Amino acid sequence: MKKYILLIACVVCSLMASAQAKKPTLMVMPSDAWCYQNGFMKEIPDGEGHAKQIPDYEEALRTSMDLKLAIAKINDLMAERGFPLKDLEQQVKLIQQQTAEQNLVTSKSGNEMAESPIDNLLRVAKADIIIELTWDIKEQGPKRTLSYILEGKDSYTGKSIGGSNGTSSPSFSADVSVLLEEAVVAHIDNFNNRLQSYFDDLFANGREVALEIRVFADNAAGIDMESEVGPNGDELAEVIDAWMAENTVQGRFSKLGSSENYIAYEQVRIPLYNAKGVAMDTEAYARQLRNFLRKEPYNIPVKVLNRGLGKCILVLGEK
Amino acid sequence: MKRTILLFALAMLIAMPIFAGAKKKAEKDTEHFRYEIECAGNGTQGTYLVKVWSYSKRPKVAAEQCMKNAVHGIIFKGYTGDNGCVAQRPLAPQPGVEMEYEEYFKAFFSDKGEYYKYVSLTGATQEIVKVGKEYKVGIVVSVQKDELRKALEQAGVIRGLGSGF
Image (cartoon, rainbow over all chains, first blue to last red; front, side, top):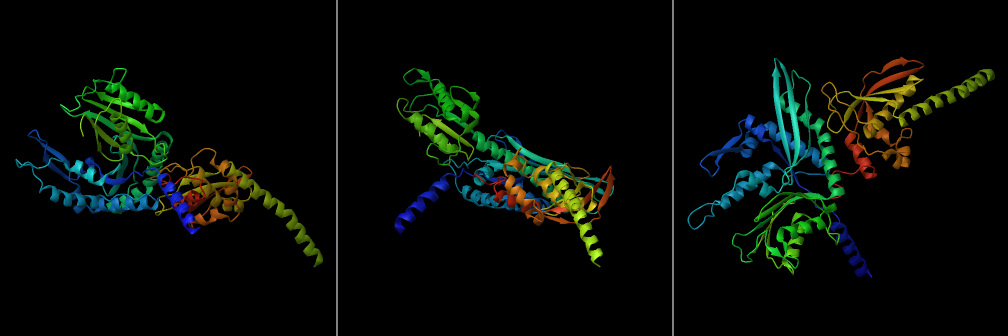
């Protein structure tokens, strides 16, 4: 009897766990504008003989106590709301460790792996939503005012989730850290309201993701997006479009661009759960499309490249 | 002596319905959002500092009602920003939520009910203004919005930020 009760309890628990949608991860980062204004930029070669400026998060975290305080405060307030954030400083340390390992990897001709710091950071952190933080102090004689912007961005679709901004009342005595802490405390609820609206929309209309379909050059299957596949002679791009229309919430998706080599979809609304009631992310959704394409009558081999909770790339033609 | 007691009892009998009537009217005013709520400064972490104006024929009733109105306002009304304050949306902005959870809020806003746990006086002086036949009383109070939000989340009135995930 006890055995049956235990079994039933296990089944109920696993069902409950699978009924939870996948939780997006959030991370607070200083905005590019703040990094530029405060001199936390570094130059990297852009591959075309020019130098490109990118934010130096490591240096910013090492030297700006105000930044550390603001991030710690936001992390603290979000944890209070039951939504702990990923910590930028820890992620930077992880990247350093990974970079040290990557530096040891070279090609046979001695070339190192190419990767920009932001690609590296996002890849390691896998933050689905980036909370960009900007502030600026303006001084008028002895008075100080702090202008503050907190903006959430979906790192895969690039869409702004919403934000909160404002200017503090002038202060004669408060230092930057006090003004900043006050601003964070005062604005976090408005930011969370926007975030809640974003989550409500997600539950009502499905998760918004991006999907890219590409083909391997000179692939073994000999296909591209204009290849006529299937019994009706439809082009591959049309077959994929029809599958997308059938398998998105209310048929909602936008085609960003297409050619014989690629199709880019954005604003793809995928259901939060699959037919079995199991939580789904972009990779699980992309695998459904892969399974569709590799079956009869198409028989197309597909490689799925996961780019986080919100983006996947399917490469057709080979594995 | 007997006459004094009788007179006192009679006076009590007359005064009690008047007091109860004023109280009842003030309760009705709350239900119909007849109060004003404004930001009174930046509260400490987890709190909102607000000034609430309530109406009653008796200043004492209006003053008592201010605490209830403050919590009611934070839940259903929110407030606009001014003088360096940041505007805040209500904790439960969904239309019709007060009717949907009528029983819960009836108990919540009963005299010295659960609402009382989340509001405290700041010690600032009351402002009393005579408006026609009634008084408008303004008091600055502090509302523990984080605790209040948690209570509403637990009751299922509002969704938590991480709920559903």
